[in-house]
Length: 178
Image 1 (cartoon, helix red, strand yellow):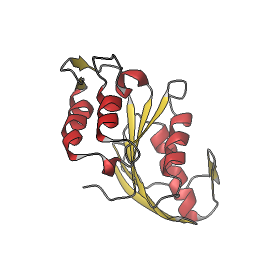
Image 2 (image 1 turned 90 degrees about the vertical axis):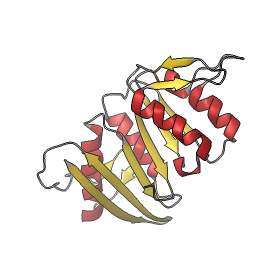
Image 3 (image 1 turned 45 degrees about the vertical axis):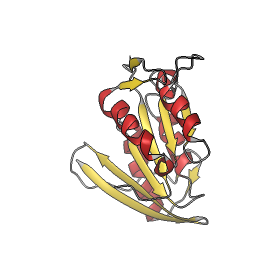
């Protein structure tokens, strides 16, 4: 598989694109393009970044983008979505840093009363961007892992729901994740 990090500088700091794609093991060539969606750059570092973004767009694999605030992580995620097979499906963003724990629980897992669908149910085959996932409260991390690994969630109110709709998720963070 392809395990690669591309670090690129921006005016706001440094971003790292970390890819763990199950693809052939041939070396990654530079992109022939000097843009990927709204991201622009002709340097070898940016063209290497665009090559990885292009490869990510061709797959349904999940992606982790790490970097300083303002480096374009969410723009890169949306550009991958727009170039991929899910481009006609929803692209939903959950900002983990700006929501309270109760709001995050309701958004991520839904609730029974009053009835609210989870973001995973709303995505229905699309893409979910979990922005600043490192800010997710500890008590919700295990539940999120269950959703991502087992395609099953428990709504507030106790109802277990299978999330069979195939979704793709991006995790975006300023902090490094283990």
